[in-house]
Image (cartoon, rainbow, N blue to C red; front, side, top):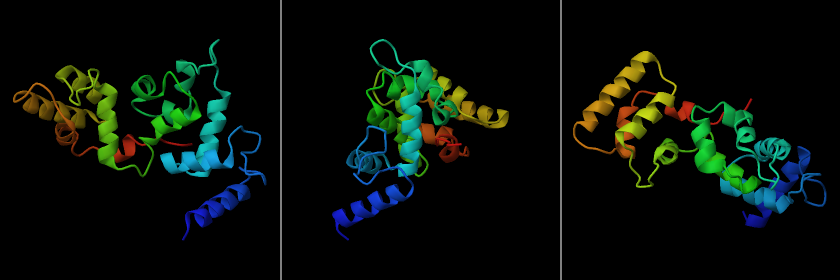
Length: 193
């Protein structure tokens, strides 16, 4: 199948759900059909999800320089429901550089994204010095924000202390070991209501 053929199918599908008009532009939304399809290819979000997110993004309050307010980003439903919402906004979404930047940051936590990739981005949210490793303090802060039962939290802290007895900083592999048994695939994914 040619790329043009696939793109035509996507545009026809988008027209069917009323998102793109006959001219190929996003209906009264300021995104061309081509831009919408590019963003879909970059992020993996469906056209319906992009339309949903675009509607929310366009409705957010902005400051005097037309930048989306941090507090507004925290109110977008999939962001607000995420256990790491504040870190996600601070590290990846704010200051917002436009809709494409916004959805690119969210795409790291969409359903269907591989767990190892979600874990890597989760570590980036807490890695303040950018060395790819988490200090004990950063690891404790991250674990405190993960949805877990008391028993799971105790088990994670015990595993963390075991690793910290051997080294000062933790990497993604260590973090995977510490969080073993948690359903991070589910809890780190964005939820759309």
